[in-house]
Length: 566
Image (cartoon, rainbow, N blue to C red; front, side, top):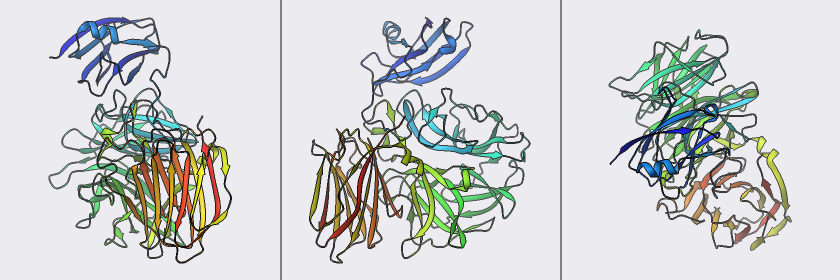
């Protein structure tokens, strides 16, 4: 039975700490000032047992005052008053063994879709769906992080409320440089889904660099109708038609709108009728133009919770033409996927990037098992940021992704290995002297014998755990086996089968693998084939094996860089 406990607390330190465990029942916590005004209210899972970690509330502005805590919980009063603590330490939680070194994670709690990405005056801005009060998908708010290099991120302490708290979903941000909408020159405009039933598209604006937003008085700018649910708006300027374009998910299709003032929107067309290859629906669309030879092509990115080639979530795309009204795909018979790993979805590109580079980041998880991952104080991470360009796989135009160059600046120790001809196997023990589980492997080799059937690359540790990649040249497949990679017990779907991707058979291969505690991101031949997969080894892999079945390869480059972050 739930009870409401109210008691006073004298604030003597910078942080109030609430012990959290995801197995506890949910409690409601309200923090009130001495006049009874609510300062913050949230739901979390406090416990009087040993906690997973402590929820941190920044109480610096309340120092030397008395607040009232009102807690609705099934715990007895004496337990509640004993377990609430205070601290001057901004990082009171114990270290999580799986927390990445150079990937973006929330300071604590649940993280999911990136949204509202934009660049302005030397800084990249990233908003993300966040539960600051626990590691489950609940209490979702929009939290704001800033970086000047997309690697070192500073998360703002104060949640950014766009619309009413807990009512907003994925959003898109643009900079209104010419004051088209009338909210001021260089105003930051956020287009978002209001999740109050029924869903609708709303607009908010900021004049203080995205710190706070004001809702547009005439919201919604697009309302739900009985024919289509609307969700996940993405807005961009289309120079050829001299208009603003919005693409939104309309379940299971994508709809395209335009506007001259960013407030009044006209429907132009739909895409995807009868051709959706996923079992669920598309969400978080992105439409953008890329150079290809002496011309350009348009790319439509679409994310899905189900139906990816290896099961669960993924990012599909189409390449084609956009005339300002209609997107026409070159090919709808073959599904193309941006990343064939199990853990890549909810991708989004940055608005207003330098030199018009198309740069994106994605959520590094899968809805099949994300709620059960073994990490504790944090839940989920983003991929490394990546640039996009067009190439070919020998049969058709494809979208390539490759890591941003800023990652080179965090290289530290390097281990260089001998170039050589290899016709059997190569074993390397302890490839880094002080291996903390964050490193980059660069391996380049030529296929010098046409009889070569398979090339296998494995990472291992002293616990017998293994992550294995196989280039099957006879079948044209890249295979990943993580069934013995570490802790796989939390979900049968995590290691149920081999993870596969189509492989273009070539004479040369450039293999670049980024490992960071709980993830492995492989970029093959400058991003023609990409695989992002989570791993949970009990200790860092520090041995590797390279073997050849039949035939022979010529290793032309082989090195490992340890990676650090400030």
